Length: 92
Image (tube, rainbow, N blue to C red):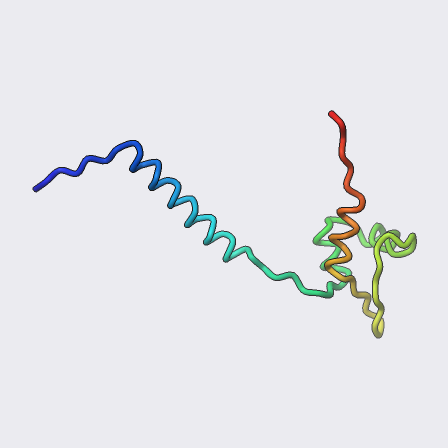
């Protein structure tokens, strides 16, 4: 039976391949496609905010919304845009 010698380079290459495979699996599983329109409870969960805070964001015009019937909907892309516009960059 012949012995196989594994080098440090072999291990490094294996590690890189394994990490790429794991990343691909994670991206595939967590690669959820968000819905275009979210209801208020979904937005509150997404942003970890209270119903009152969400209402304030609507009232002061920070977050645009659409009301159909009695249900308020928020555009997912609009939420991302508001988050980007309100990003704070500290100069530390």
